[in-house]
Image 1 (spheres, helix red, strand yellow):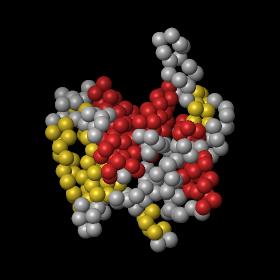
Image 2 (cartoon, one colour; image 1 turned 180 degrees about the vertical axis):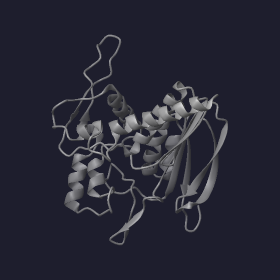
Image 3 (cartoon, one colour; image 1 turned 30 degrees about the horizontal axis):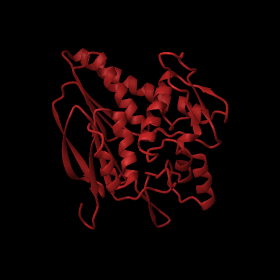
Image 4 (cartoon, helix red, strand yellow; image 1 turned 135 degrees about the vertical axis):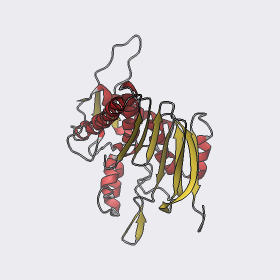
Length: 292
């Protein structure tokens, strides 16, 4: 998925710990094979290449992944939207970066949006399970797992480690943290959004997932202008680079999706949104001149 995974596992015996760590890595490998858009042979890449208007049969795992992403798309009024692959390509965010022409940006916006992907309804007690298919409604629609893939991989890794006999497990996947088991308090340092090498604040998390969205790691200057990697799906433009958003919650998928969505919302709206759900905590770091 274009990043690094760090795993720390404890168990009653060393062989069990080794088996649990291997099970966690294999679980992440399986998610990568399903969701990665850094490779052409993943299941998600095949969906992105499927013919428009023709149902593409999904694995049940990918269907559940997409349903989870769709849920957060709805709950955030579209500030989290994984169907921005065309915009990612327009800005060449996987390469050296570029500012697209007005025509290229308009075409990418036209292709983007999760409303362009049709998913089958969930089964109820009175209806049989539907065929797990998805249909692309418009040409150019591309789902990018960059905003939710790490969370799904972390959830799978945590389950696999515990099922393999781990007592506790701690993961750091490209900066997103997740703990399972009675790990006790864990101090996590949040970097200054202007300089990742400089700590800004520390949080104490108890068996939760912590995800931060900021442009400090991937900010670049293109044609004399700063280009961040976090895009606003509503406008197609880079989101306002005000600082950083950190989300702390039990569900790593929620943490992953929401850190992106709340950054796109901006600091004030992010804090207003976060005042609602009781099980989600949010920290906003806003840059003001030379300070935070």
